[in-house]
Length: 421
Image (cartoon, one colour):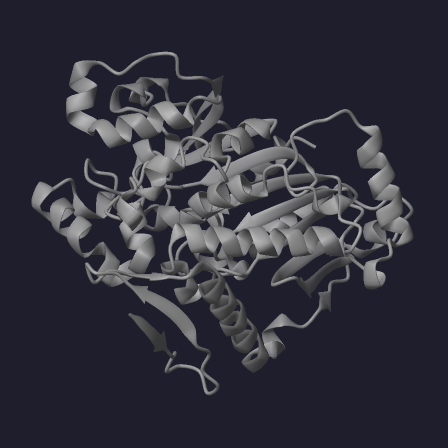
């Protein structure tokens, strides 16, 4: 049965097709849902265009609306003979927006004006974050391709994502893996290559074959407080205090609060009888190369709150088993980065969990850990225990709003100072 659904929030509603299965479950058709999300985002922008006007500061920093998001760059550097060649894609979390990365993006460009262009993604903002990791990932992949086509000078790409945005970014890179958009001769000028695209094409052809994302060289994949193992049980959603009856109830009702994203986070989705999406995202599939894409990056880094994050637990955000978490006597205070308490350099999981670990964490969680740690990760543990902002640690780690989350600035600086260019 086919039903046409209209959004009551729009004056000019857009239709989107739903497929109603025999079991009564609903899911978007991919093309219809992507188009609906794109048009809805365009409409939101049209009624609030004053918030998205291009702006330029006295320091030469410019914020420019582009390809469904906002580009942040140094004007002089971009207009120079050797413009920045490193594109940094910043992805927001649930109920977030491009504005969540404003502080980090500006600090990034001020510190590395001739090295990076930062694109703050906007294709999955506000209630669009309830659409599910897969649909959001498809939208992000399309947005990235649009940015790359618009900026032929970029040669490298990195992702920086917060919370749910880390899962969305992991899905998007699986879609972008091996995609050579920079070699597409039909990008501009009615099928004719511009001078910049011709130069870019020749450079790509001269290089030996390497794994590419959207035709670019993958460099850093960085997540902040991302629930890589989902939010299902075992204190992965600390707000529930580890109470089993609350965790069980949350799994049953998450979709009522967060839509398809809730199902994905609590591993209750069962599309076409397939395993939960997060479980599938720890390996390659026929058309989505999730692990190959992660492996293509020079670095993979997981920043995780060790305490006071009520939304995402320490284990799920650092991709560890319980016994692998650093003990309190190992945590240190760094004078330069006072809230960075432990740094674990790139490690690959060669150990199998004991039978006790399997019993405590469950098979799906163990399978996700083993899948994701096929590639090495850096772990950076963060603690705001002595901060007055500790109760909002989930947003402080990102500095979502400087006046509320300013204590997280050193975490952002740590990320920038260790960024691989």
